[in-house]
Length: 196
Image (cartoon, rainbow, N blue to C red; front, side):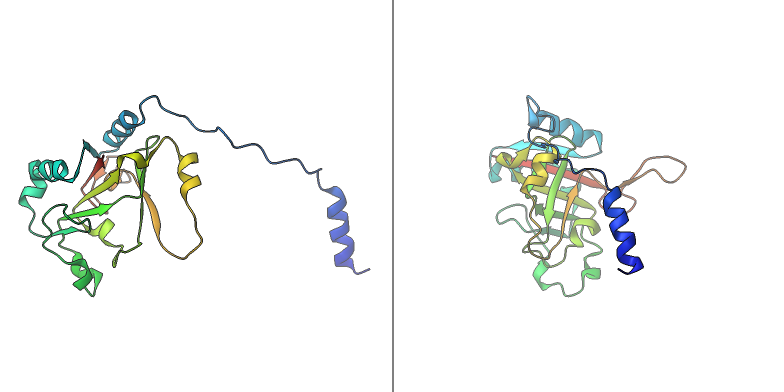
């Protein structure tokens, strides 16, 4: 027996007995009103929330948003939502998106616990748009709202390569003299529409 095998056997004899993994079923807070919870947390992290019944109502609310009224460069990847002026598919270099003022993108689902929205790059040419736009608008189907991160992670699958992130509110940092700065590294605002 080699010295390596001797050491490994000694380690193996010293290991604690195996115990079963804990049951993770039923973990996580479930809210009486997850939509109200989501709206409250999103507001607390600097975001804005709208609940609309359909795309028509969403478009009406869009027109009331000051930053949307003044925007000249708008990206919308949702058919019938907003009035896009930039075709993301025609942009070769994502650096050319530096002056996009509003991006309207789909959120896969939302989490009431932390006001986050799960986004991916599926069907998206430049994922930089999530972070380079001045104002980010995420549209989520209302039935895609979950209570907590346990439920959120149950919905995730990492079978194929790709990109995904939880976005909760606009960009923020408090590194500089502990003063909260909104929009220092990314969107200055984040608005979430729950539709349905």
